[in-house]
Image 1 (cartoon, rainbow, N blue to C red):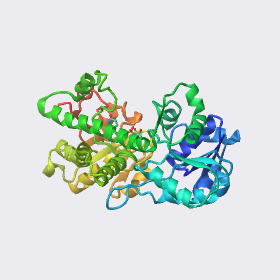
Image 2: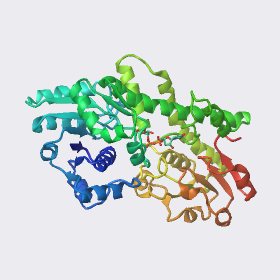
Image 3: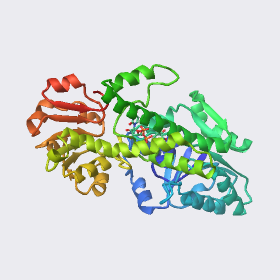
Image 4: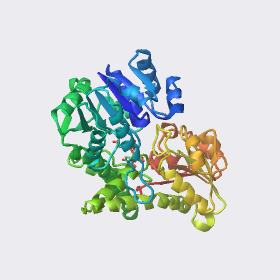
Length: 436
Ligand code: UDX
């Protein structure tokens, strides 16, 4: 089957490459010529493990190509995916749908055969209706259906998530849409991945509800971590203890500096906006957004405390290990590291940082921070080493070397990747999250 993927960003590129790997004939379309030229030359616009090889293999096999020409790209495609960005609109947090609508208009004008138009971008409830209206208004003579098919890809694990999903959600209003989507996902059908067919509005809401629920789970355990510190409990034991209850589940209960990234912050805000528009408040999510926002700066204050409080901290220097919002990505969007560095700068603390993939993206967002070539270069002369992102490279630091390089042996582990007794036995003072 020929598939067109409009939008060759993170979601479009990963999805397109995986569909090609399933044996479909995929054209990825993007209006930015520079991006398409790079992709044609085999250069990935993002860092995602396994993606470059997957793209290269499928381009070589003749199943994957790239173009800026939407009309040409969608010709003969039975499924046309919309995978363009839906950033938070300035001012009100609503998802900005202008790119989605623009693609719908162009698809309507260029449609040369019957096709199913599939929204993969994360879009508020009712967007499918609007896309359908826009395409119909183009006066196309071809049969089309508009389907919702949200993605649940985690950065850093996106290819695995695509090929072995917990579920595939399809929101379709008619049999034509369902039939084409069954064909698109046939390889996963054969793998017995569960496919859930629902109506379009339910599918659109599932995506937001899933992300808001996960953000809630993280925020819940983060607040439990604060409480653990007060009452002398250990948040990792609490997480294990509640997670063994199958109704709760053990995943997404790692306490840390707060969630960031391209999805949770944006999607929780967009859900709040939808809830407001429909006069049906989701107060839990309102609380989650507030708690997560204030947590990031609170983590900066935690570091200041570890340095001896506001007066003692002024003029000191810390090594920040990890800048991206999570490991295995170069994505800095809403990373806690940004707010933590800002809080430290406000407190007069100098920050030297190292991240395996994120420094280029981080530089313009963290102007006062000195970027270093290695964790040990950042640690030299530091009054505290602060782990913000749990990259594997930081899990087994040479603690003797760290101790020799740092001015003070103090480790602030905001991801709880070290065992307190081991670090203390190595002669460090150790501060972590929710572990007394
Ligand atoms: C998320 C969803 O998981 C994915 O299904 C959706 O489609 C896009 O958004 P992603 O943003 O890539 O994916 O990362 P994820 O691994 O979910 O982590 C999000 C944030 O939560 C990170 O900042 C991470 O550090 C934080 N997190 C996650 C925690 O603090 N604790 C946890 O237990 C899990």
